[in-house]
Length: 411
Image (cartoon, rainbow, N blue to C red; front, top):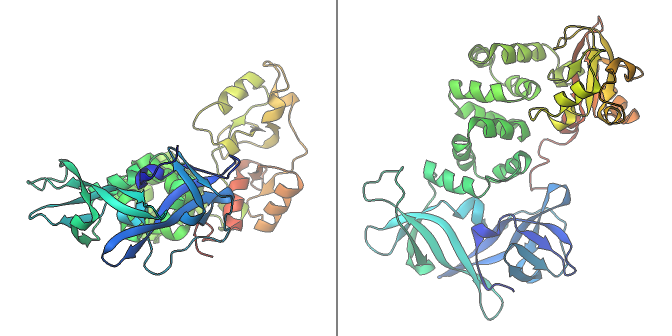
């Protein structure tokens, strides 16, 4: 059944479907247009379609809104979304905003608001869900809530407190790190920094790994050294090294001194290499085994939750030691091959010895060529003595190939 009144925060993440029921994307935000002496009107949705592309879906092309889904007439304009004129985005710019109400001594924050369809099919803002401030002004004590009409609001302010950030964060808390990064880039800088402050260290580390360089630096420069070190500790060493290479040398060294010794040493080693070489792009956190390791033992290592999917696709076989910088590189066993052999089979009998490792100073062009030629997800990187140093993964190569602003909604 189609609804005629919905709250905007509940629309985020809803599936967008064409007339035959095929999913074409998901709702990211609602675009509103202000009007003179009248409630703002919903002009349409920002939706995310395949390839993380964000486009505009006008309300005129929406045939129904029902719980958990938006139905369209099937016509989607594939041009990237950008706001025009005085348009604003409900989730990114409206929720969490402080407002004053017509009644004396009343103010609060917008936690949600409804849009309602009139007889002409237009969707206009009606009532707002407001969290009132407590009389004591204590930011840690939640005040009562109430519904107010649009015409009961007399003032808007643009501040962004911790409570505002928490509310806005609640609308995106279930997003994957890559999707959260895209959402964060849509926000004004002060809102992005306020939300970053509210994230726990692990979630913030995941976010930083997905953000482009400029946003990474804005966030890390806003953090105190102690927290910055904790967050960098939780990042992959290759991502942390890329970020720290853009920090002043003094701060980089101060942060390294505060980090876990093992993590700091990995990053120091990576910082020695030029950025666009195999050494500068590789990760040292691999699954490394001996020749007499069994298939069962190798699969147990792959199953660990901490292992990234791209690194779980293969097991590298070396001489001892078995942590980077490891012993001499002998070969690799791909995950698919492990599935074809009995648990007791030894990796030494299954190794792919045809895959040639690359040197730490190999340029980007060679990395691209080898990954494409041999259909690989990772390339082993060795030093001049043949010892395994790490591996360059395909996801890191893609990050370098794509333009810096590939997450941006602008052309």
